[in-house]
Structures are given as C-alpha cells and as structure tokens.
Length: 385
Image (cartoon, rainbow, N blue to C red):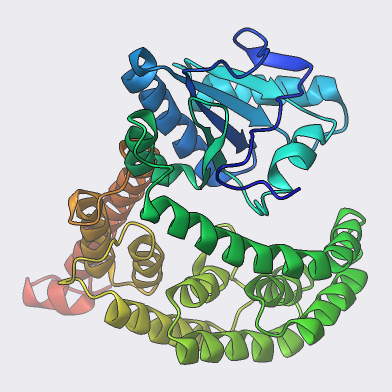
C-alpha cells in the first residue's frame, strides 16, 4: 500500500538503539518526526542539528524525534555502530532524541519504499492520531511542524497540494531509479574492483539509456579525467558537459562541471591549463549572470565554487569578494535554517581565511620581486652583479 498523507503510520521495527530508550509505539496525543539519515549524507549533519533545535523548542507541545540510520555501508554491524557513534559525537554532541540503527532494510521497506522517498535526509511527521501528516525534506519542518502541532496542517489545501506534488515528483524519480539500479550495481562493483574499463562501460550504457542524467554524465567525466587520466577521450567529454550545462542555463549542471575542473579534491596538474581556465571562465560568468551579486538569490552554494576558479586563476581579490557575498547570503531575504547555517559557515570562514593568507603571501612575494629586480636596483643606485 502506498504511504502518503492521511495513511496510518507504519510501526517502527528496529532492534538496535544507539541513543535513547527503545521505541515501543506511537502514543495518541503526541507528534513524531521520524528521520532517515546516514553518515555519508552531507546534508544529514545540518538536518540533525536542526532536529535538536526542534526537539528542544517543541518538547512541551508533545514532539518526539526519532532518527533512523538505515543506509549505512560497512563490513560488519560492529564497524557500523562504531562509525555511527563517532559521527554522532562529532556532528551532534548535544543530541536530545532517539537514534535507531536498522541494518536489515526493514524500515526502508515499511517507510521509504511505499512513500516513493528516494533520498535522504527524509522526514516523516506523524500526527497526534497516528496518521502521516507530512513526508519531505527536513528543511521544510520549520514551516510545517508548527501547523501540525496546532492541528491546522493536515486538513489544509497547502498540505494536500504538497503531498500530491511530492508523489508525482518522487514517483517519477523512483521509476527512473529502477532503470538505473542494474547499471549502478555494475558500476559500483567495477569501482570497488578498480576495474575502470568495466566502470566506463557501465556508465556509457547508462548515458545511452538516459543521456540527460547528470549523475551518469559526471561519472563519465570523472572516470576519464580523474581515474584513467585519459585526456584524449576525457577532454571532449568535458567540453560537451560544459556546453550542455551552459545551454541548459542550469546552475546545478554548471556547478557540477566547475567542480570537475577546480575542486581541490582532484589533481588538475595533467589538464591542459589554458583550456581548463577558459572553460572555468565561461562557467563562472554564466553562474554569476544567473545569480548576480546584486540579486537576492542565495549564494552560499554557488559562489564558493566560482570563488575557487577566480582564486586558482590568480584573481584573489575577486575570490575573496565572492566568498564574502556567500557569507552574507544566509542572512539575506532567502533565509536558511540555523542548523544548516552552523554547518556551512565554518567551512566558508576557513576558506576565506586561507584566501586572505594566500593574497598576503602573493603581495609579499610581489614586493620582494620588485625590491630585488634589476630595474629597481638600478634606480636605487645599486650595481647588478
């Protein structure tokens, strides 16, 4: 049976509880957030901090949060539990809600699969009568949860429209994932074996099936340029990705392409330098045209990537300016949750500090070169030897 708004919430079937008392059943009169997350999921850290705040804020109104780790990848349950414990201690030391670990896949079968929930983090809100009130991304909870708590959400047109749109969107994604699964299985098996030829074959099969799938396109570029170091085959693929990203006028595609060219996680020493910077310039200019500095759009996601291009190309002042704009963006008209802000800002501040230090070193180097240049020495009356 499909799981959607108004349906009875499934049970929570978990044997291992990492934090808090084991959960027995949903109690009438209380509101629950059941959150699916994983240690490898970047946004899950911000979501966990947000849930800590929501649990504290609404505990007297009857809220209880339950986190479920059901997508961990490790060789043994003991290893997974150690990894989960370390992640929680680092990312969420002030945790104030239950955390369950389900290695069996039972919770995904009961909750995520019947609701077409295709990614994590995913939040399920259970109303005071034990029925599903909301399914979606935790960033929506700041707006939705108060309405669930006061009883106005589930009967609203807004809630019904949101759930209808979610089912249509996620149902299409779920069908696409069904097509992708055999390709992904083949690809990841090849990656694990470091069989790049087999991995490339799987990805090319995927692109033939879904030419507009950004995940397959990125994997194609990454394999050729960063795994196989095949510039002859890889550069035409990279050029096409840049052209398609710009033609689509898609910030997501342009950022993905820019990451392949300038992410510090990759070694770019074997790239043709001139072409790399030419592609970076085009992508950066189009991103800034799509989301200009004077506009109110959020910049904390796109501007750091563009700043990396400017920094690597030698324009350190522009890089610093863009990072400063990214730091101001979370306080702008399109606010992000406090928890996400706390997760993002330290990385941006650290990058800004390193850029400033790099600019200072470059300025000092320039002054030293000028001081000891033949022209300067001649002007100061010194002889060149």
